[in-house]
Image (cartoon, rainbow, N blue to C red; front, side):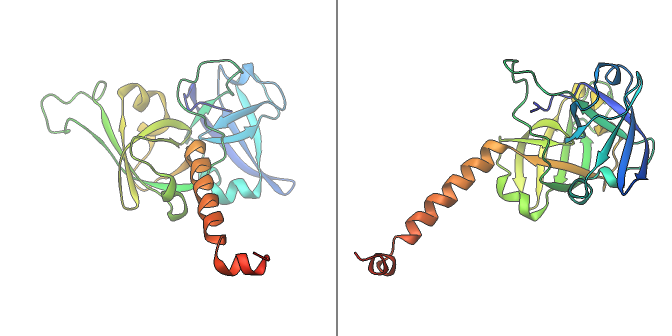
Length: 224
């Protein structure tokens, strides 16, 4: 389990075929040295297993499900990825519960400073930003204003929902510490809805289904 608090970014070195699977190589000085073979880690919101580790690099194999559901298979060498190690049991939850199980790939619509570029008060280092993301249709049902969402593995709070788009306030620390500042409009981004929202929605659906099943026809068919 993760919390969506990104520890550092890494750099994609390669994405290559290896024995029928796709293997990524990520340069991650500092973090790679802390990994052991078989450890889990979050890579731009995707839970992967670290392989062939050395002090500066790690590798990971991408299952077909990962290629189909996430943006990792479309990245080019040099792309920045967000990295997070799993949260130890009993540690404070700095963000929210993030599983690393991406629900789908959205599109970055815009990432604009709150203070316009043209303003004399604009300071790229200190300004807040507004992130707008187009969310896949099957994920929109879990987008709740003021609720949590993981975008590229980053724990964020949804400011508003407008049709197929969500808006999110981005602090300077998040902008510079993660890969957000390296992404352009149209870039694919991994989205994981808050698992607690998904569970609540499932419970409501099951409750409605139970109510729906309790009909005169059901009662007659079951001997009432």
